[in-house]
Amino acid sequence: MIGKQRISRKSCGGFTVVELMITASLAILLTSVGTPTMVTAVHNSQVRTTTNDLFASLHLARSESIKRNGTITVVANSGGWAYGWSIRSGATVIRQQDAIEDLTITTISAGVTSIVFDAEGRATNTSAVTLVVSKTNSSAMIKCITLSSTQRAFVLSDKDYDGDCTNG
Image (cartoon, rainbow, N blue to C red):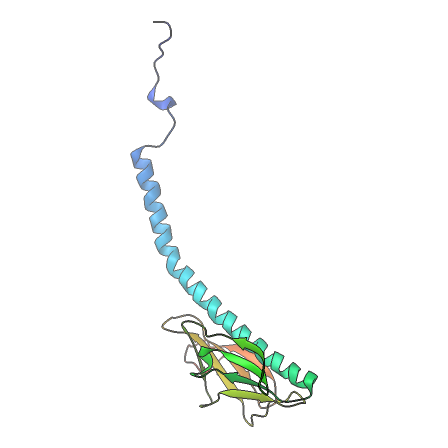
């Protein structure tokens, strides 16, 4: 019996069924804990991105009004700001933003569907305009873009989630 060797159980590589079950249980547990956090992070990212896009659109409109020495309008698409917006010089579209899925963009000043910048880069609105960006049916962050009566645009976070950004 020269060629036959006895192989012990300890020298075989691999995992036991118990080890595989413990590993699978830990993987499921970690996934179930991490998934809600990841969903909120994605929703927060969508709100942040849309807020930045709208804020950049206001700055672009202001700089274009100065550059072109004329009136530039940021106008909400039909249905409201959440359906997108465009930057226009008369009938010419400078930039178009498409609708944003599952986001809500409202105005604290009711009925504001456009913001107009004159040739000097000043908004012609007589009072402050605040646009509130939030995720529909979510506990994600709420951001507000305010174009103040002093012509300064800034972004605030709504820390108490009431949609007015007075605390932010």
